[in-house]
Length: 206
Length: 427
Image 1: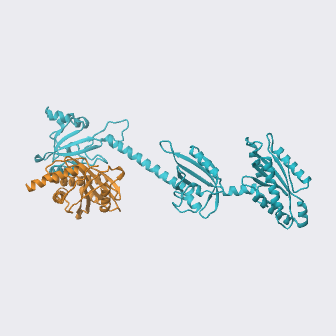
Image 2 (image 1 turned 90 degrees about the vertical axis):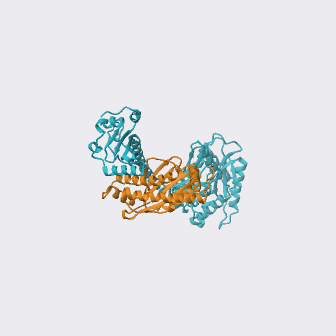
Image 3 (image 1 turned 120 degrees about the vertical axis):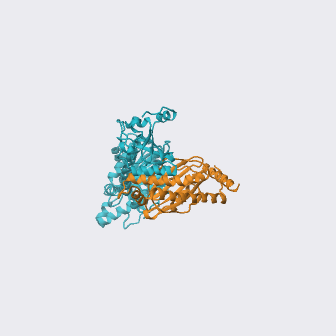
């Protein structure tokens, strides 16, 4: 069994601060690139196992509607999975906004969702990794429509001992666009993140 | 314009996917060999010209936004590759099994020289993968359809067939809704119960063990059994029990399908029962008699006997007291004879005032002893009139037939009558 990585209060503070900067960047990028002006919530950070993650998603995502769930992997010294979740209604609003059509088709909607995910992941993760002086590689995102809020299939998921969950919410009221963001890192990557934060702390206090 | 021959170009031309470099105004700065071959536009045609010239159908507003995002964020952007191709159309030459006439592309727009507004667009042919996905989707739809039909059929079975599933130790693990409804049980009420518990105790333990044995040998068992409903009513059913093996071949469950045969049993009972005395009738007796004759393992001291009994002077009872009182005598005698007989032996009304018995696993002395016991039981009966019975016994010996055995019993009975009645004789 893998040893649990213990995050101190200092580690969590640094991570929280880095993520605050990251969401600020993301908001600015969306305003600039997609002409949508809104806010993003202060991220919540939790360390859990896979069952805890499933539970967390159940509590965060409403069960009533269908969701476009876009997942994008990122690799490098800090690797993980970026998940962006919006309801089908919001996805249509997004398609409307980006493609400027009354009734966007499925392809428009999928592409719009991918585009927004790209911007969110690139700004948030890049900002985080920039602060930590590392580079990451982004992989092609993929979207699937999931009915309800069962976004994690336990039977298809390896038993990671630890998962770090960074979650936030974005709201662009004029465009009726809002969604949930989860950034997940597991086992070895959590240790890597801790080491990088340690370096950052050393830099700060050197 | 000739493509410069240098290492980066050689490398880019060697790639098995398309690489182009464009600026924010869609001007092409580089076009690799893969694109030359697959689009039919060579490097010299493309470089320095706008993509718009060759591909006016692309959504350039979206492309521009993606290029801008790539440049601003210094990070790759992507086209969604899951539905239709939204970038340049490239013909596909696969004929044998293609679902797609143009390539399904995975398109990645990466930053190239940011300060000059240039991006590198990589296009990967993912048509085979996409085809597989489409085929898989179709298969999934088929499976979903079949699954829905199966569910429907399962529902019909659950609602209409009386089914009980047990584990390898005959403990109930699943019961159909129809079974619960028919026998008055609640859902899950029978779970974990031993199968034998719902069967009537009229079924001999040996027969139940035989059924288990047959099933444990991997063979199907079928037969008629009585099941006790929640309110205690015994209901006859026709049962077919099938053993099921797991992947390693060991038996792990049994499925019993029952069919209510109450009406059949009622008719059968009517056809085989004497209405007055409720004893088996001659037809039923003959049936059992024939089965006994077919057995081949009878010995002198372990055989079976036919006993015929006749009420002495029964005609006088009828004449003096009337037929209804005569019938009453018949009923009472039938009752006491049945009660005196031990389990496994058979009694039937042979006709008029005659009864017949089949005693199994007896010797001559044992048969006489049983007949004597029956005679005394009637003798001790206190009715409005004293009644006595005469008995004639015949013992099966090798070579006997239905007729010979009955004849000898009849002769013995005649002898008993002749020798003074209320006695037992054997021939």
